[in-house]
Image (cartoon, rainbow, N blue to C red; front, top):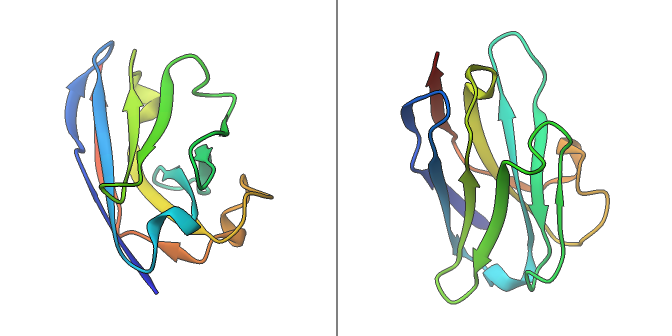
Length: 124
């Protein structure tokens, strides 16, 4: 079992930045590929970015490439999402998730563990 807790969400103006963090506890954090997803009201959960177990590989969704970046600190059992140049359409609940292998990383159905989410609101 892995428990995930997100933090860092909030209200920010368009063009601003936020950094989300997801702290993991339980089994060895470095055994899991990690990802961020988001879900806006009335929309499906959207893949944002993923990072491999060691951090050597990352993959981002088209809607955030060049603006968001994912990183991890295995010593702290934490994964981060740095969000820059935020837009009102980035408003959503952001979730971190964990899976046991670095494959099929864009599909939410492939993840074994989820956090409770953190709200990000971008005002225009």
